[in-house]
Length: 490
Image (cartoon, rainbow, N blue to C red; front, side):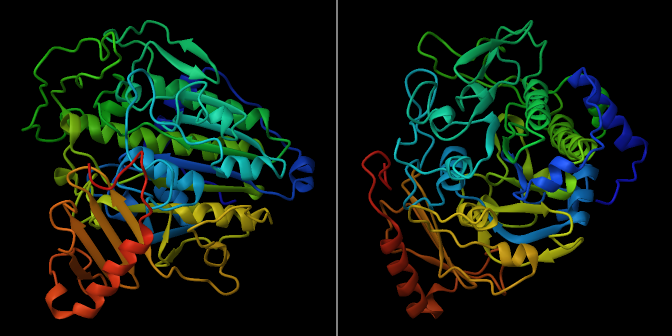
């Protein structure tokens, strides 16, 4: 793999994170294990609430993302890749199960009274289970949100040999929690008590990620890295990354919640509020650049271990940019000029960056407009490891596009649904995009957009194409299978 040529900015970032991990890894100069390992290692990095336009390689002008931009130059960048949903849990469920939100078991961010969310059922097949079945060591590091500890949805019960991070999405709203989970054990974070901010949890998660890669370097591994950043709350360590942006932007919208920064959880584990933030623009930019530095460190670590040639690295995001906690996607053009943000089914809420690097397999510095999505990852990985999927999938393998080999099958359509705000549905078929908002009140009020001419979805042409409207409405009825746990309208 081509080496990164680093400027002082990039070197500074790597120094910060190498120090944060408090330990050097020795370079593995032997390639014997790599040559013997015919199955590629897979590292799937998932940012949280990072918009399509938050990266330099996707047009970002105010935030620096040099490592991810460099990663894109080493492989392929997709321009029409879609998240599984417009919010966290169903997007991850769609990714893990290979099913869109009309079929996947978890279709909303439904919270349980205590710590955790509704669990994936035991009979769900996940990517981790599929890869584990063909000899992969599997690990997840970051935010789970698909089943509380000990439940059937616990990551250890869904194919992951190791989990470290936030099991509960509510907990992940705070970056200085008292503890994280390592499999079935809670691990205390020094100095943290919901108020005091000593140990930054994402740094600890990054350490665990790198340790997993090191430990499993001599066998095929799957590292699922669902980062928490840059999801609200907006808070960052007072370090040299923050120094890049401190005082740089106009801060005309300081974030001030109605109460002081107190414990995020009461006796019933009910989340209350985000921290106040005087510099939300600077802090958000810092958090995105921190994601970039984590990615740079993972790539550097893989190279030092001699694993680059046999490792597929993917970077993407779980949904569009958020507006909570002081986040301001309009200021940063976080949606990349597309309409909508998180919780929208317009393009800005569901279109995601997607970068993949696999030396000598994926051509460098290439771009694809192939229409792909989260639920494609299961069949794509299955084809890579030559494993038949023992269950139904809504996905289509896009390995031919990644490798620029063979015939690439296309989706008949893509489908999404969102279960709040009266229910929302969206379908993409070819270049046609149909969207219904407030399904409970207006189930037939479908907006129609021609993405080939109107990617910003500014011109509703439903009146001009009644046959297309009828076709997309029919697809919505076909794609949605009722769920007692997650009704479409609630």
